[in-house]
Length: 103
Image (tube, rainbow, N blue to C red):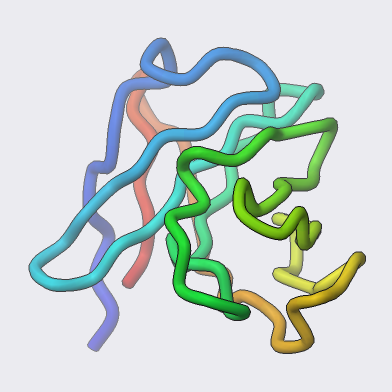
């Protein structure tokens, strides 16, 4: 059963920024977009398993730092190749100044 996990404080991520969050052997990214919405997705690019936490966030997208594949963090969809597989995204919520992810 999926559970809600406190991932970070809302102040830990600037607008249009990303942080890495690990749970056991799994790696996630938490993204804050230009409208202060928070999103969670798998933390590795689907093209060559590069950490997306080193990528650039623009509005509600993140670019892989290695080959510049761009993903929409709202739904995980690939917008720009070479990646061809979407990211898995996870529900997020903000309560009492903390960002929670459901995994």
